[in-house]
Length: 308
Image 1 (cartoon, rainbow, N blue to C red):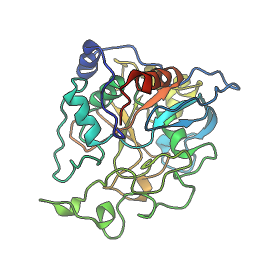
Image 2 (cartoon, rainbow, N blue to C red; image 1 turned 120 degrees about the vertical axis):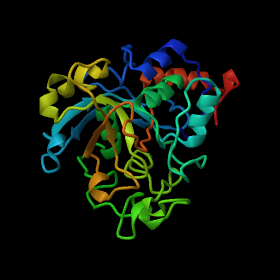
Image 3 (cartoon, rainbow, N blue to C red; image 1 turned 90 degrees about the vertical axis):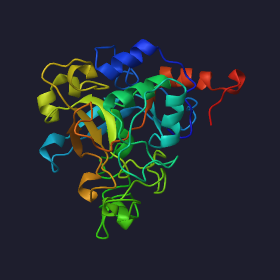
Image 4 (tube, rainbow, N blue to C red; image 1 turned 30 degrees about the vertical axis):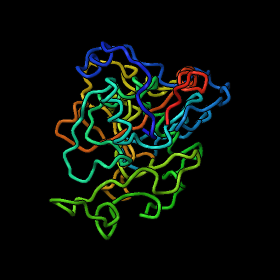
């Protein structure tokens, strides 16, 4: 993720269930703080930043229809990984037995600090569970990306350029940087954190790698109904599996492969959780207050095993 190892144990049966798509209880995906009362940030786990609880503007009435309508949504205090999960961190989890191996098809995408891509939704969820965290809900991801003022990009409303994000521009994909090997014009991801962080200190919330989030996809927030309107929304079926009539999960944030129009804080893409057909999607993890406290305790100096 950010250099962390998979030192936190996970019940093998839970991971197996996630990989196979069996129904399992969803981790508390966000603080349960009621509207009007957000708990303060405590010590952040290593490699995470605090996103204070409160109201934020989700969606947009001027962008694609699937991001409508814009609404004020309550999300309680939580923590988000500062960077996308890296190749180094994911492979450490595989070596520790907490994650299964996930192939990355493109050449030149496996530097230790590049984002780990090519994972299924199940792989991403299992990794976060292995570290005592959870895959962020779509609402958590959007609040962490845009803050409370409804900005269209993580830095404001100025259209994205390669100064801000690793995207496609007039020079080509990945800001004109060619990848090694065949199909060089397809470009590649950059190591995490090469562009300025947003207001919460998070890197690559626009561009670099698309990021899986927890929610099942709904064509828009109105059709999703009450599960998308309540405090700390988790989307259709509260994110649980199976979810009748739902076949796709959501990815957010744009990537090196596409331009500024997909690198906004509101652009929503969907894909099969099994990642078929194959795409180079990545992810990052989140933690609610209870999860964060356990992660901090598990990696404190007293335990003698702080991850680096």
